Amino acid sequence: MELGKADSQPGRTMKLKLHWQIFIAMALGALWATLFPAQAMMAAPLGDIFMRLLKMVIVPLILTSITAGVAGIGDSRSLGRLGAKTFLYYVVTSILAITIGLTLANVIQPGVGLEVAQERAIDPSDLEQPGSVADILLRIIPLNPVRAAADGDILGIIFFAIMFGFAITRVPDRYSEPLLTFFQAAFEAMMKLTMVIIRLAPIGVFGLISRAVVSMGGELFQAVGLYMVTIATGLTLHFVVVLPLLLLITTGRNPLDHYRAMMSVMAMAFSASSSSATLPLTLEAVEHKAGVSNKVSSFVLPMGATINMDGTALYECAGVLFIAQALGIDLSFSQQLIVVFTALLASIGAAGVPSAGLVMIFIVLEAVNITSPEAYALVGVMLAVDRPLDMYRTVVNVISDSTGAVVIAHSEGEELAYPRIRK
Ligand code: ASP
Image 1 (cartoon, helix red, strand yellow):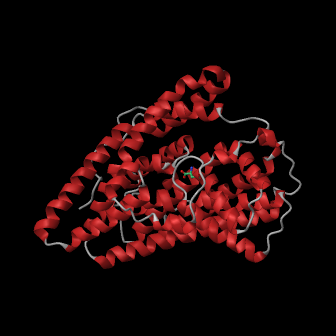
Image 2: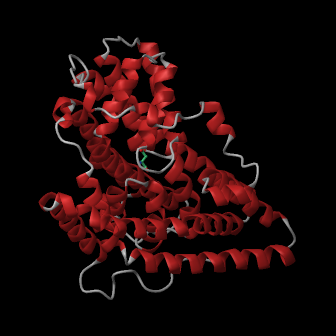
Image 3: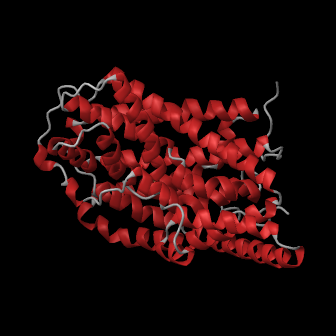
């Protein structure tokens, strides 16, 4: 059974398509915050309300979507195949992104000769330090799934939902059928609710952008301009070359069709800097606009929102090289390999929330023994200018997830909503 294919698309009944409404709201929000910075924060509650509504649906959406999706797959071989493809896609795209970051940081050398007035940086000791990599991996298994849901521990919920969905396929039909129907029905209802909330996106995005513009500090940007250019160039290469090419080659579809379908998703990721908060929109768009089945999207997207972060992976790698260069530390080839590997793990461990990627940079720094107070002070500088980079890398994170869903759906023989490019 195909889930979530039914009925109305948000914005269809409105004159202006939803993504245009969102773009206009973004422009207006930025204008408002620039012209009236003192009053700009008045709009922030609109963003807060919207974010809370989205967060409200995330846990039930993930739980019902994955449980129904996995239970609907049926046999363990299909599940294993889907899991292997998803894992391969996550790792390959993240490594490609890291390689871009590594190359650009070595070529542009943004940290060399850097002088920054540290007093404008933010104290990084305010940040909650991440646990070790082993810790992060172990925590995927929740001690108590109910608590994982209550705490919004997405990885824990995903793990439980996959196991539970799988268990449903192994019990006799008289038990599995009502459970499957229940989770499918609950998922449909959650999707309906999500679509209602998504209609509020223009109002929410207006508030989110106003706050983002006001909180961006000025002069530091100039001092670390080259660092920002390096990251932005890397993200752009991945966003406009690597991922579209991958989509084109593997599916024979025009990447522009996909990017057009994901407009509101990208606008949301940009405004909220959060893959998790964008997830309801991503699920909706990938199913209804790209034509991917619930079976694939419910498997690839929620996990992707926490695990597959190409933009963050690129950022971790280039960011650490930047710090090393600024401190005059020459990282050997093998140390750079360690950076690549830990950047991948850090991107997997980063939560899909604002600036999570920056916090994880401590793990990568530690792996190559860069733990001096000067290094941490530089993280503070990076934090002060993080917002625009975070907005952009979140867009890249989310578009990689949606591209993955399309690529995997195609490989599973699904008919996509995009026309094939004639050969
Ligand atoms: N904000 C990013 C996301 O939610 C994570 C990061 O900080 O890199 O995808």
